[in-house]
Amino acid sequence: MKRTKIIELLRGELVGQQVNVKGWVRTRRGNKAVAFIALNDGSTIHNLQVVADLANFSDELISKITTGAALSVDGQLVSSQGQGQSVEIQASQIEVLGTADPQTYPLQKKGHSLEFLREIAHLRPRTNTFGAIYRIRHQMSIAIHTYFHERGFIYFHAPIITGSDAEGAGQMFQVTTLPLEATPRLQDGSVDYGQDFFARPTSLTVSGQLEGEMAAMALGAIYTFGPTFRAENSNTARHLAEFWMIEPEVAFYDINDNMDLAEDFIKHCVRWALDHCWDDIQFLSEHFDKELIDRLRFVLEKPFKRMTYTEGIEVLEQAKAAGRKFEFPVYWGADLASEHERYLVEEHYQRPVIVTDYPKEIKSFYMKLNDDGKTVRGMDVLFPKIGEIIGGSEREADYEKLRLRAEEMGVPDKDIWWYLDSRRYGTAPHAGFGLGFERLLLFVTGMANIRDVIPFPRTPRNAEF
Ligand code: ATP
Ligand code: MN
Image (cartoon, rainbow, N blue to C red; front, side, top):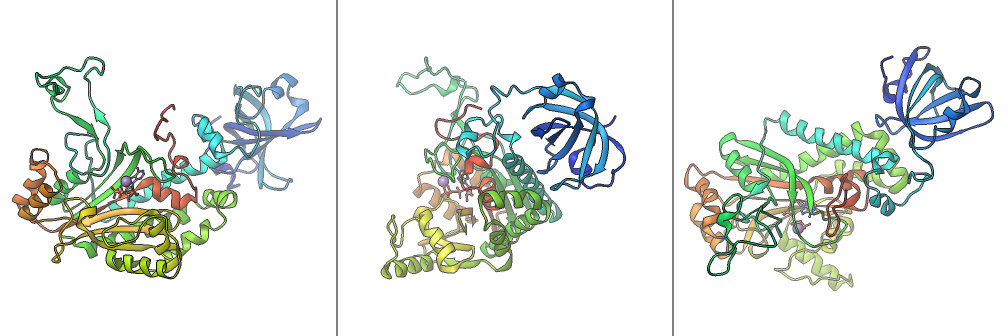
């Protein structure tokens, strides 16, 4: 018999028919006459109840139906008398496809801690929580591609191995085939990269932006969506060593267009989550974050607050003067710490905030310099509970200014000559931003730790699975 997924069976349209269902046992309970098996196949957070009349099945078979076992069940779909489900399956045949020894299967009882589940990351997809998260992760990917596709953006693939460490976004992971134990050296003692695979130092990319800009200057509007890598040793709940980033880049956009795009895009994603992931979001809200759904709706309602960095510092200084304590210093020129970002969003404005026009010293060389000569047209989108979720800018389109900024920031010409070329030939205003996919997922799922919104997190001293 052809398998039907549980999500379809629960719709109830097949009541009365013979069906086949395959999935994994969540629980088995019952009495001397009948066993009730909660089966889940990943198509939905909800389980299907399998009712097995013990007169029809051997004790041996029933004893193998333990939490985690994989089953194939034939039977009639019927309306359920019991509470908690609308339909159930009256089993006529049960095949145990794979047993799960209850002595060793680690997912026995409910309510394992998230910390414990991280230690069994290979099995945590079997839990309701991670099933929900991975389905939402999928839906958000579709939301992103849909948004850009419908607006004529081209999905552009930036390389993962890069020869330039120009972006300056953080520490990079080196890519090499040279033997670490016997590194070939030149006469002066330095590493002989001529013998390396690419005959030059290379690393994993920290951002696809520079390549994305090359594409935007021909295709008009592009986006990348791929893995990025940062060897920053920041063991926080918001940083991964491997994360996914979405980076749109648009020709002829200035920073205001860029802000409009960022706000519209992120609202689209949040709306999509509410429209397409309702059951999973409701489950996560119930178990982890009672305010989740309110927070999602709240973001959709109001326009984001837009302000300059200088205004932001003023607000923070006023807060300090009024007695608000911050761990990190507040002064013009300092980078905003997460506590500052969250003060602006959660306490002062009580909505998402876009901060623009940062001091040039704390931002990358490619951001467009303002007429004041001190600030650049960068923009960070700050979110409740997360802090920075998007970082972007209008790019410096002027060749001489860009070259000068690169020089001032110590970015060598030999690394970015090709990037500078885009300003020599047919340069034009353009802008773009990077959204950290897992930060978006933190917001949409209400999870508190970024390790819990990516299947196999890579963080300092952790890459086992
Ligand atoms: P932060 O200050 O939070 O470290 P950043 O300024 O280094 O972020 P950008 O270089 O602007 O971030 O990268 C763009 C986006 O990528 C950020 O807004 C964030 O959403 C995401 N991001 C950056 N670093 C990480 C990381 N280590 N893990 C997960 N997401 C990240
Ligand atoms: Mn960072």
